[in-house]
Length: 90
Image (cartoon, rainbow, N blue to C red):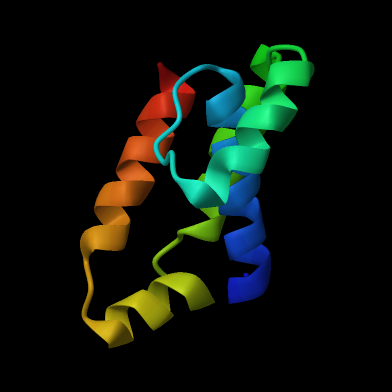
């Protein structure tokens, strides 16, 4: 998967996590997300499952995003992805 598509999938999954009341990031970048989820209904189980699958696909070891993070030598992104998956699984 292309890294741009993977980043979009991860961002969308974070919106779902916010909708579930289990955000993994809350800062100036997510203020508009909070506004949106305040108006939207709670994500369905189906949407939540799809978000989790999207995160899995976006972060596969053979994907471009994982390769870019590996080249950068930063493993913190895996910790962040694990938190996001946990928020979607809870």
